[in-house]
Amino acid sequence: MRIGFIGLGTMGEPIANNLRKAGHELTVWNRTPSRADHIVSKGGKLARTPRECATGRDLVLTCVSDEAALSAVLEGADGALAGLAHGDVLVDFSTSGARAAKAVAEEVARRGARFVACPLLGSRSAAEQAQLVVVAGGSAAARERARPALHAVAARIFELDEPEKAALMKIVVYAVGNAMVAALGESLALGAAGGLEPWRIIEVLQASSFHSPLFLMKGELVERKDYAPRFKLSLAEKDERLVEEAAADLGVKLALGEAVRRLFAEGVRTGRGDSDVAAVAELWQRAKKP
Ligand SMILES: NC(=O)c1ccc[n+]([C@@H]2O[C@H](COP(=O)([O-])OP(=O)(O)OC[C@H]3O[C@@H](n4cnc5c(N)ncnc54)[C@H](OP(=O)(O)O)[C@@H]3O)[C@@H](O)[C@H]2O)c1
Image 1 (spheres, rainbow, N blue to C red):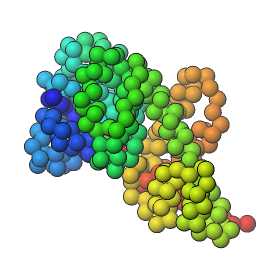
Image 2: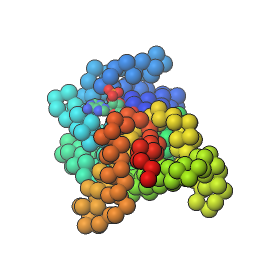
Image 3: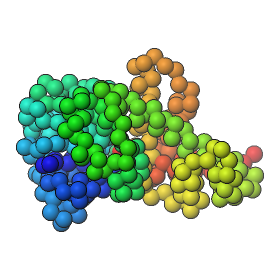
């Protein structure tokens, strides 16, 4: 397929690379053009604008930070929407929430094109190994068009009929993951205050029925104090904001979600937004001992 790909960040770059390796003809656009160098050196084309990237493609894919970034690449005279023709399919891999999924689907439909919200689950290394889990929400015909590209990047594809349901599924599942990261940070700090080393706590935790690859992955980062971003705290905080928005829209009161959002917001406020989400573990270390 001729694919237009917009957004070559932590996740977008390896996803685009796997599409190229699978033999798709790739045109890319990124706000910071140098992040396209690797793809271009391997034969991908660099578009001058999102509109050019989206024009004349079998499939247009976006993978950017949040709703504001999505609006920035879709809207305006140079935006990707202006490049869509009747019958085209736009797939958004970003975690942008149910409100944005609904609004973008309506905007795309007004142009006679079709939209699939396709949020990602998985880390950068899962993206590099084409082992992502994706939740594709859109009409059957639009999902059919997207499927070859999704198979090139994901190990599991879950399908739903509506974009906003896929967006909701992603944040519902990530709310669990974010709460697990917060719980791990809190427990490591409590254990450390009583003289337990982090690796011993993780060892016992992993032998218990609560074990999780997430605890191992993030626990090792906390142990090494290695907070280079695999999944930025600012993006996790954004996900929790989307959880809060969904809860407000659906009339559900969340206690844990609000606590996690406050914690992540404090992490961002104290300058850790560009660090890995595991850096929230440091927030407890700042608390004074009695
Ligand atoms: N990282 C993970 O483990 C992970 C896992 C699952 C889902 N996700 C989701 O996947 C999406 C991408 O995450 P990521 O980790 O790849 O983020 P990232 O590394 O921060 O990359 C963000 C991308 O969005 C672009 N962007 C941001 N603001 C923009 C704007 N105003 N206009 C145009 N482009 C803009 C960036 O362009 P520049 O290069 O110019 O900054 C970059 O291409 C997010 O929605 C995230 O929540 C991430």
